[in-house]
Amino acid sequence: MNWTLEVVPVPVTDLDRAKEFYGEKCGFRIDLDTEVAPGIRIIQATPPGSRCSIALTSGMPPMPGTRTTPPGGLHGLQLCVTDIEAARAELVGRGVAVSPVRHVGATGWEDGKGGTWNSFLTFEDPDGNGWVVQEAPSELSER
Image (cartoon, rainbow, N blue to C red; front, side):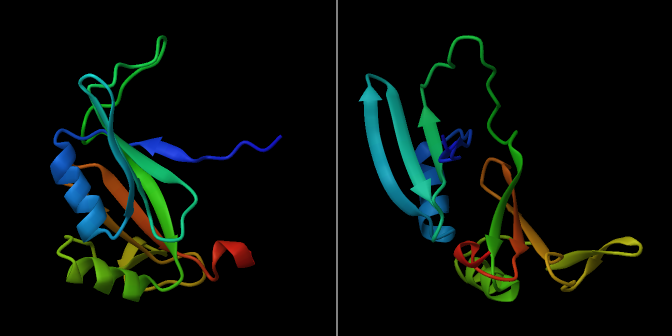
Protein backbone atom coordinates (compact mmCIF):
# COMPACT_ATOMS: atom_id res chain seq x y z
CA MET A 1 0.00 0.00 0.00
CA ASN A 2 1.32 3.47 -0.91
CA TRP A 3 1.14 6.29 1.62
CA THR A 4 1.11 9.50 -0.36
CA LEU A 5 1.40 12.97 1.05
CA GLU A 6 -1.38 14.81 -0.76
CA VAL A 7 -2.56 17.76 1.35
CA VAL A 8 -0.78 19.90 3.94
CA PRO A 9 -2.88 22.29 6.05
CA VAL A 10 -1.50 25.83 6.12
CA PRO A 11 -2.98 27.96 8.93
CA VAL A 12 -3.99 31.48 7.87
CA THR A 13 -6.10 34.30 9.29
CA ASP A 14 -7.68 35.66 6.10
CA LEU A 15 -8.68 33.11 3.46
CA ASP A 16 -9.21 35.61 0.66
CA ARG A 17 -5.81 37.23 1.25
CA ALA A 18 -4.15 33.79 1.39
CA LYS A 19 -5.96 32.67 -1.78
CA GLU A 20 -4.67 35.75 -3.60
CA PHE A 21 -1.13 35.24 -2.28
CA TYR A 22 -0.87 31.55 -3.16
CA GLY A 23 -2.88 31.76 -6.38
CA GLU A 24 -1.74 35.04 -7.91
CA LYS A 25 1.64 35.71 -6.31
CA CYS A 26 2.98 32.16 -5.98
CA GLY A 27 1.25 30.77 -9.07
CA PHE A 28 -0.44 27.85 -7.28
CA ARG A 29 -3.53 26.42 -9.01
CA ILE A 30 -6.70 26.99 -6.97
CA ASP A 31 -8.37 23.58 -7.08
CA LEU A 32 -11.21 24.16 -4.66
CA ASP A 33 -12.88 27.03 -2.81
CA THR A 34 -15.99 25.83 -1.06
CA GLU A 35 -17.98 25.89 2.14
CA VAL A 36 -18.13 22.22 3.19
CA ALA A 37 -20.46 22.89 6.13
CA PRO A 38 -22.01 26.06 7.56
CA GLY A 39 -19.12 28.36 8.54
CA ILE A 40 -16.39 25.95 7.36
CA ARG A 41 -14.59 27.05 4.19
CA ILE A 42 -11.74 25.21 2.50
CA ILE A 43 -9.46 26.45 -0.26
CA GLN A 44 -7.14 23.87 -1.80
CA ALA A 45 -4.18 25.08 -3.86
CA THR A 46 -1.49 23.11 -5.69
CA PRO A 47 2.02 24.30 -6.64
CA PRO A 48 2.81 23.96 -10.36
CA GLY A 49 3.78 20.36 -11.14
CA SER A 50 3.12 19.09 -7.61
CA ARG A 51 0.97 16.14 -6.60
CA CYS A 52 0.68 17.56 -3.08
CA SER A 53 -1.64 20.48 -2.33
CA ILE A 54 -2.09 22.87 0.54
CA ALA A 55 -5.38 23.40 2.36
CA LEU A 56 -6.33 26.82 3.67
CA THR A 57 -9.24 26.54 6.07
CA SER A 58 -11.52 28.69 8.16
CA GLY A 59 -13.82 27.46 10.88
CA MET A 60 -12.57 23.87 10.65
CA PRO A 61 -12.61 22.29 14.10
CA PRO A 62 -9.55 20.17 14.94
CA MET A 63 -9.94 16.41 14.70
CA PRO A 64 -10.39 14.85 18.14
CA GLY A 65 -7.04 14.18 19.78
CA THR A 66 -5.08 16.51 17.47
CA ARG A 67 -3.39 19.86 17.96
CA THR A 68 -3.66 22.97 15.84
CA THR A 69 -0.93 25.20 14.49
CA PRO A 70 -1.62 28.92 14.79
CA PRO A 71 -1.54 31.10 11.68
CA GLY A 72 2.08 31.91 10.90
CA GLY A 73 3.29 28.91 12.90
CA LEU A 74 4.15 26.61 9.99
CA HIS A 75 7.79 26.74 8.89
CA GLY A 76 10.07 24.71 6.68
CA LEU A 77 7.67 23.47 4.04
CA GLN A 78 9.91 22.81 1.08
CA LEU A 79 9.33 23.14 -2.63
CA CYS A 80 11.84 21.92 -5.23
CA VAL A 81 12.61 23.54 -8.58
CA THR A 82 15.20 22.83 -11.26
CA ASP A 83 16.25 26.48 -11.71
CA ILE A 84 16.49 28.44 -8.46
CA GLU A 85 17.30 31.75 -10.17
CA ALA A 86 14.28 31.48 -12.49
CA ALA A 87 12.07 30.56 -9.53
CA ARG A 88 13.33 33.57 -7.58
CA ALA A 89 12.81 35.88 -10.56
CA GLU A 90 9.26 34.60 -11.04
CA LEU A 91 8.35 35.12 -7.37
CA VAL A 92 9.92 38.59 -7.28
CA GLY A 93 8.12 39.46 -10.52
CA ARG A 94 4.83 38.46 -8.90
CA GLY A 95 5.52 40.69 -5.88
CA VAL A 96 6.70 38.11 -3.33
CA ALA A 97 9.41 39.19 -0.87
CA VAL A 98 12.06 36.51 -1.40
CA SER A 99 15.46 35.96 0.19
CA PRO A 100 18.61 35.89 -1.90
CA VAL A 101 19.72 32.48 -3.17
CA ARG A 102 21.91 30.90 -0.49
CA HIS A 103 23.84 27.70 0.11
CA VAL A 104 25.44 25.99 3.05
CA GLY A 105 29.19 26.64 2.99
CA ALA A 106 32.18 26.22 5.25
CA THR A 107 31.03 29.06 7.52
CA GLY A 108 27.28 28.32 7.48
CA TRP A 109 24.79 30.02 5.16
CA GLU A 110 26.48 31.93 2.35
CA ASP A 111 25.02 33.98 -0.50
CA GLY A 112 24.91 32.48 -3.99
CA LYS A 113 24.36 29.05 -5.48
CA GLY A 114 26.02 25.97 -4.09
CA GLY A 115 26.55 22.56 -5.61
CA THR A 116 23.93 19.93 -6.36
CA TRP A 117 21.03 20.04 -3.87
CA ASN A 118 22.67 23.02 -2.13
CA SER A 119 20.87 26.14 -3.39
CA PHE A 120 17.94 27.58 -1.48
CA LEU A 121 15.71 30.61 -1.08
CA THR A 122 12.99 31.42 1.42
CA PHE A 123 9.76 33.41 1.56
CA GLU A 124 6.78 33.85 3.86
CA ASP A 125 3.07 34.17 3.25
CA PRO A 126 1.16 37.18 4.66
CA ASP A 127 0.66 35.37 8.00
CA GLY A 128 4.33 34.49 8.37
CA ASN A 129 4.19 30.81 7.38
CA GLY A 130 7.69 30.07 6.09
CA TRP A 131 8.62 28.29 2.89
CA VAL A 132 11.96 26.99 1.57
CA VAL A 133 12.65 26.49 -2.13
CA GLN A 134 15.50 24.14 -3.03
CA GLU A 135 17.11 23.59 -6.40
CA ALA A 136 16.98 19.94 -7.50
CA PRO A 137 19.21 18.56 -10.27
CA SER A 138 16.23 17.24 -12.27
CA GLU A 139 12.47 16.92 -12.25
CA LEU A 140 11.04 14.49 -9.70
CA SER A 141 9.83 12.16 -12.47
CA GLU A 142 13.44 11.81 -13.64
CA ARG A 143 14.95 10.95 -10.25
